[in-house]
Image (tube, rainbow, N blue to C red):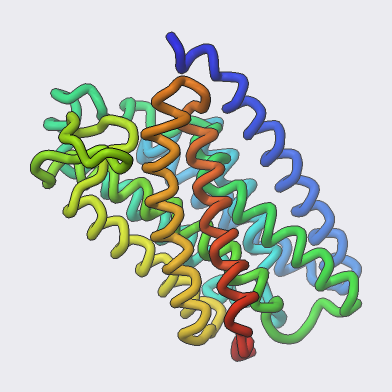
Length: 297
């Protein structure tokens, strides 16, 4: 009942993310069309729509969630594409990694999770869950990409500046790390412990951490960071900072779960959104402390 009273937070995340992603997609579409890139526009729209349809048909997400994911995927692809456009060198690759890891993680040990009452619904993820996990990556990538396009006046050439890639990729890495750590930890861990007090708690409780879940989440963050680094021909700085951001966000998610969510102040969507934001925040701090030499274009 307490979580139902916080549904406004999920709606707020949706209202913030979806219109922003749509506006960014329209902005970049217009920019590309002005530079005679209609083929690339069609390609991005078709691939993102196809991913949404597959996700829906696999029942990994509801229809609304699949449509939200398709819109966000298109926005992120628009924000990270280069010319001549190659879809495998855009944000599509790390998004696929996040989707596959989440899909696999939720289905591992499903029978045990159903007994615990922590299994995801058969309908799959909701639109607000998708927006909460991918929204921050959309914000940071879109804002920087628009500034880059406007300032350069070009729709050709190499990849976007390092902040676009590092901050967005860290947020995506956190989204995967959080999901995988939670899903795997419930199945393979022994007695999880509350992150704030280290006292034993039941599997699936907000703020619970375990060795198995932490290792799985760290691996998921590294996989997504590696996929994104490969996609944009990045270097080890991009990989390391994105992975670090993802792992930090995973622990921050547990901290919020044990405190503000446990106290009934935040719901899960708000926690996920803030956790991905913390991942981008750490990546930004690392960029400030360790100047990034750039990416190979």
